[in-house]
Image 1 (tube, rainbow, N blue to C red):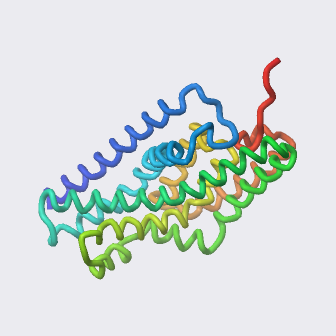
Image 2 (image 1 turned 90 degrees about the vertical axis):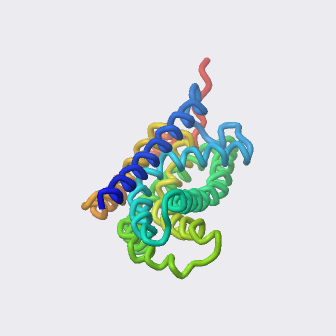
Length: 253
């Protein structure tokens, strides 16, 4: 039992260390760049690399309980390095699900940049609608269902025995990552409105995701967050700077 606890704690520590490294690399990649519309000059490949770092930084702390639980399920089925390799495959599959969503994020960021350039007045209202939509999604049954899965994944993990083949753990990660995307895509869409590489909002969303998934009052917090986003959205049309991802700041004279 003590060995299990040690391994579980080690998995937490490893994921938090990777998340910290991802934060450091993300901050370094965006240093000197003010939040703004578009993909910040990055092509699709460059954007996806940075998106992967962002997702590792923001989401790995929230997936640590799942990995720890997965290790317990694997305890009688694998040993030593096999457990570590299978857990790593789960994490890779999880991040692949978010990397796939990065394709959507790239399209949204690019479209937002074009809109801010060509129709700035309309872009401001789109920013308000994106924020309001994210707030409304927080209170939908689909959000609640996906959040319930992320908060209590034991039933899902017990089903992994039905998977077979060398890629079974990767498939488990993809499956869980899909639920996580379903739970959090609205919050990630907020980044299109406030700037995809807005570090302050990234940190706030990362904390919000962690609280939703791990805090005992996570569901209530999720609802309050939705109300807060709706309130924030109401101010955007009259203060476009609140949505810098869809607003070009005036050039200094």
